Amino acid sequence: MSDADAIDLALLIFRCGIGAVMLAHGINHIIGGGKIAGTAGWFGSMGMKQPLMQAWLASITEIGAGLLLVLGLLTPFGAAGVVGVMAVAWVINHRGNGFFIFRPGEGWEYVMSLLLCGIVLGAVGPGSWSLDEAFDIRDDLSGVTGLSIAALAGLGGSAVLLAVFWRPPHADQSA
Image (cartoon, helix red, strand yellow):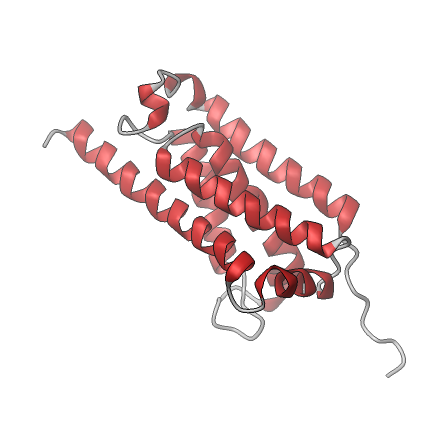
Protein backbone atom coordinates (compact mmCIF):
# COMPACT_ATOMS: atom_id res chain seq x y z
CA MET A 1 0.00 0.00 0.00
CA SER A 2 1.33 3.41 -0.93
CA ASP A 3 1.23 6.47 1.30
CA ALA A 4 -1.46 7.94 -0.98
CA ASP A 5 -3.58 4.79 -0.60
CA ALA A 6 -3.17 4.91 3.18
CA ILE A 7 -4.37 8.52 3.23
CA ASP A 8 -7.32 7.72 0.96
CA LEU A 9 -8.26 4.78 3.16
CA ALA A 10 -8.04 6.92 6.30
CA LEU A 11 -10.21 9.63 4.71
CA LEU A 12 -12.73 7.01 3.58
CA ILE A 13 -12.96 5.60 7.11
CA PHE A 14 -13.13 9.07 8.65
CA ARG A 15 -15.82 10.51 6.40
CA CYS A 16 -17.88 7.30 6.45
CA GLY A 17 -17.69 7.22 10.24
CA ILE A 18 -18.80 10.84 10.61
CA GLY A 19 -21.41 10.32 7.90
CA ALA A 20 -22.79 7.24 9.66
CA VAL A 21 -23.08 9.17 12.93
CA MET A 22 -25.03 11.93 11.19
CA LEU A 23 -27.27 9.44 9.38
CA ALA A 24 -28.02 7.64 12.64
CA HIS A 25 -28.90 10.91 14.39
CA GLY A 26 -31.19 12.07 11.61
CA ILE A 27 -32.99 8.75 11.31
CA ASN A 28 -33.33 8.48 15.09
CA HIS A 29 -34.93 11.92 15.27
CA ILE A 30 -37.58 10.75 12.81
CA ILE A 31 -38.32 7.15 13.86
CA GLY A 32 -36.67 6.62 17.25
CA GLY A 33 -38.12 7.18 20.70
CA GLY A 34 -40.79 9.84 20.44
CA LYS A 35 -40.42 9.99 16.66
CA ILE A 36 -40.50 13.36 14.88
CA ALA A 37 -43.24 14.67 17.20
CA GLY A 38 -41.06 13.94 20.23
CA THR A 39 -38.08 15.62 18.56
CA ALA A 40 -40.27 18.65 17.84
CA GLY A 41 -41.42 18.75 21.46
CA TRP A 42 -37.81 18.60 22.64
CA PHE A 43 -36.79 21.40 20.25
CA GLY A 44 -39.74 23.48 21.42
CA SER A 45 -38.75 22.98 25.06
CA MET A 46 -35.35 24.50 24.26
CA GLY A 47 -36.90 27.61 22.74
CA MET A 48 -36.97 26.74 19.04
CA LYS A 49 -39.91 28.41 17.30
CA GLN A 50 -41.83 26.32 14.78
CA PRO A 51 -40.43 23.20 16.43
CA LEU A 52 -41.93 20.67 14.01
CA MET A 53 -40.30 22.45 11.09
CA GLN A 54 -37.03 22.63 13.07
CA ALA A 55 -37.19 18.91 13.84
CA TRP A 56 -37.62 18.08 10.17
CA LEU A 57 -34.94 20.57 9.10
CA ALA A 58 -32.39 19.15 11.55
CA SER A 59 -33.26 15.55 10.70
CA ILE A 60 -33.12 16.04 6.92
CA THR A 61 -29.88 18.03 7.25
CA GLU A 62 -28.29 15.24 9.31
CA ILE A 63 -29.42 12.57 6.84
CA GLY A 64 -28.36 14.60 3.80
CA ALA A 65 -25.00 15.54 5.29
CA GLY A 66 -24.41 11.93 6.31
CA LEU A 67 -25.16 10.62 2.83
CA LEU A 68 -22.94 13.23 1.15
CA LEU A 69 -20.05 12.33 3.44
CA VAL A 70 -20.43 8.57 3.02
CA LEU A 71 -20.52 9.00 -0.76
CA GLY A 72 -17.77 11.62 -0.80
CA LEU A 73 -20.08 13.77 -2.93
CA LEU A 74 -20.06 17.56 -2.63
CA THR A 75 -18.10 16.93 0.54
CA PRO A 76 -17.81 20.53 1.80
CA PHE A 77 -21.60 20.86 1.66
CA GLY A 78 -22.04 17.67 3.68
CA ALA A 79 -19.43 18.99 6.08
CA ALA A 80 -21.31 22.31 6.30
CA GLY A 81 -24.41 20.36 7.34
CA VAL A 82 -22.44 18.74 10.15
CA VAL A 83 -21.01 22.09 11.25
CA GLY A 84 -24.40 23.80 11.18
CA VAL A 85 -26.34 21.15 13.07
CA MET A 86 -23.62 20.78 15.70
CA ALA A 87 -23.31 24.55 16.16
CA VAL A 88 -27.05 24.81 16.84
CA ALA A 89 -26.93 21.83 19.22
CA TRP A 90 -23.96 23.38 21.02
CA VAL A 91 -25.74 26.70 21.53
CA ILE A 92 -29.26 25.56 22.42
CA ASN A 93 -28.58 22.38 24.38
CA HIS A 94 -24.97 21.76 25.43
CA ARG A 95 -23.10 25.03 26.06
CA GLY A 96 -24.21 25.54 29.65
CA ASN A 97 -23.51 21.97 30.74
CA GLY A 98 -19.72 22.01 30.99
CA PHE A 99 -17.26 20.28 28.73
CA PHE A 100 -17.73 16.56 29.38
CA ILE A 101 -20.56 14.68 27.69
CA PHE A 102 -21.17 12.55 30.78
CA ARG A 103 -22.09 15.59 32.92
CA PRO A 104 -25.75 16.26 33.69
CA GLY A 105 -27.43 17.75 30.63
CA GLU A 106 -24.58 16.48 28.43
CA GLY A 107 -21.58 18.75 28.00
CA TRP A 108 -20.33 20.09 24.71
CA GLU A 109 -17.28 17.90 23.99
CA TYR A 110 -19.19 15.66 21.56
CA VAL A 111 -20.81 18.39 19.48
CA MET A 112 -17.54 20.35 19.43
CA SER A 113 -15.69 17.26 18.16
CA LEU A 114 -18.18 16.66 15.35
CA LEU A 115 -18.20 20.35 14.43
CA LEU A 116 -14.39 20.35 14.14
CA CYS A 117 -14.51 17.13 12.10
CA GLY A 118 -16.87 18.88 9.69
CA ILE A 119 -14.53 21.83 9.27
CA VAL A 120 -11.55 19.53 8.69
CA LEU A 121 -13.41 17.37 6.15
CA GLY A 122 -14.44 20.48 4.26
CA ALA A 123 -10.84 21.63 3.96
CA VAL A 124 -9.10 18.30 3.41
CA GLY A 125 -11.76 16.81 1.17
CA PRO A 126 -12.93 13.22 0.78
CA GLY A 127 -9.81 11.71 -0.73
CA SER A 128 -9.48 9.97 -4.07
CA TRP A 129 -11.92 7.18 -3.20
CA SER A 130 -14.98 9.38 -3.56
CA LEU A 131 -17.63 10.54 -6.00
CA ASP A 132 -16.07 13.99 -5.92
CA GLU A 133 -13.00 12.37 -7.50
CA ALA A 134 -15.10 10.33 -9.95
CA PHE A 135 -16.88 13.50 -11.10
CA ASP A 136 -13.55 15.38 -11.24
CA ILE A 137 -14.63 18.06 -8.74
CA ARG A 138 -12.51 17.05 -5.74
CA ASP A 139 -9.73 19.57 -6.36
CA ASP A 140 -12.27 22.36 -6.97
CA LEU A 141 -13.95 21.72 -3.60
CA SER A 142 -11.04 21.25 -1.22
CA GLY A 143 -8.55 23.58 0.42
CA VAL A 144 -9.65 27.17 1.01
CA THR A 145 -12.86 26.66 -1.00
CA GLY A 146 -13.90 23.60 0.98
CA LEU A 147 -12.92 25.17 4.29
CA SER A 148 -14.91 28.30 3.43
CA ILE A 149 -18.00 26.33 2.42
CA ALA A 150 -17.91 24.08 5.48
CA ALA A 151 -17.15 26.78 8.04
CA LEU A 152 -18.98 29.78 6.62
CA ALA A 153 -22.08 28.01 5.33
CA GLY A 154 -22.29 25.83 8.44
CA LEU A 155 -21.69 28.56 11.00
CA GLY A 156 -23.47 31.24 8.98
CA GLY A 157 -26.52 29.06 8.43
CA SER A 158 -26.68 28.17 12.11
CA ALA A 159 -26.34 31.84 13.11
CA VAL A 160 -29.22 32.83 10.83
CA LEU A 161 -31.38 29.96 12.06
CA LEU A 162 -30.72 30.84 15.69
CA ALA A 163 -31.36 34.56 15.13
CA VAL A 164 -34.70 33.90 13.45
CA PHE A 165 -36.05 30.86 15.31
CA TRP A 166 -34.46 30.56 18.77
CA ARG A 167 -35.86 32.28 21.79
CA PRO A 168 -34.24 30.74 24.88
CA PRO A 169 -36.71 29.90 27.60
CA HIS A 170 -36.46 32.26 30.57
CA ALA A 171 -35.98 30.87 34.06
CA ASP A 172 -39.08 31.17 36.22
CA GLN A 173 -38.70 34.51 38.00
CA SER A 174 -41.51 33.85 40.50
CA ALA A 175 -39.49 31.54 42.73
